[in-house]
Image (cartoon, rainbow, N blue to C red):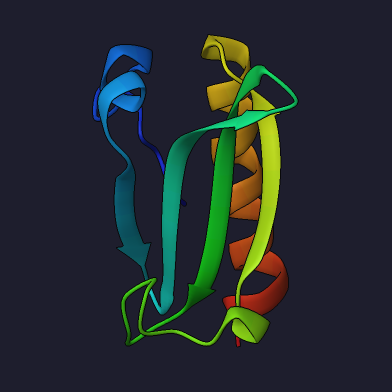
Length: 88
């Protein structure tokens, strides 16, 4: 299970993206702007390659509110995607 408690906070996401991996799945959380609204963009894709080196067809993404609640929702979504696509 992915648990980012204590590893990431909103001030970090305001300045840079956060990437990680978990048992075959890579992920990225990043501040994005959609229609003048800040959101957390979450993306998952299979290992072994980086975000830029992976075909877009292999990536799945979703956005969440840019607040602490949205960050919790994003982490929950990462775990759901892991359970759905990466557990064999």
